[in-house]
Length: 226
Ligand code: 6GU
Image (cartoon, rainbow, N blue to C red):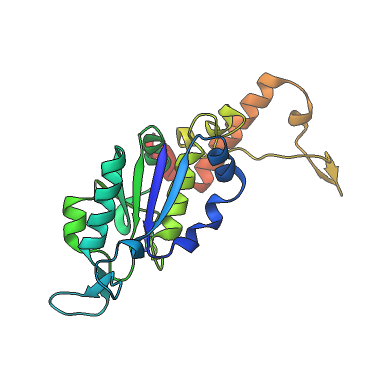
């Protein structure tokens, strides 16, 4: 899979893809993340990317032409399964959407800024609009890195233990059970006996019960969904 991210602030996306799992996924050749500076596709000598809104009102609007130019270039080079626009009024990202996108081909992600993009971009070029929650961020970049992370870790081979993505919170609409590591007794705070027992089946059952209990108390809405 290849993910092309289009942004006015490419530097903002340096760090999220340069560490840990996302870094290794790229090194292993399982995903290629390419960040594009929209400035390189600006149309006039002023390198203008945004302009005043028709009809007035506060805030600048991202222009259609630079976006058309980069999308046309990318699509002439390879096929893309989706052209995603990050926007607070998109559909809210959840685990199911991440799962679906991880199974697709190449993705383009456009990060919004200012008052947003010219509506004609959304009407004619964008195939999916995604938000990461009901709050407002300064731009789509952090949201794009959240979305990309949620997708990339699901690509087979990215996580060393392939089952570990399947036991994450939200897969099966259940929160993950509590986990412990050494020491078994820290200043009187003890690890549950069952986990030290070596009874694989009982441990499995305990973890399931804990997941269910946790979901009931913290996120009962998830149980209604499944
Ligand atoms: Cl995708 N963009 C912005 N600017 N704010 C957000 C968001 C996206 N998702 C939640 N808040």
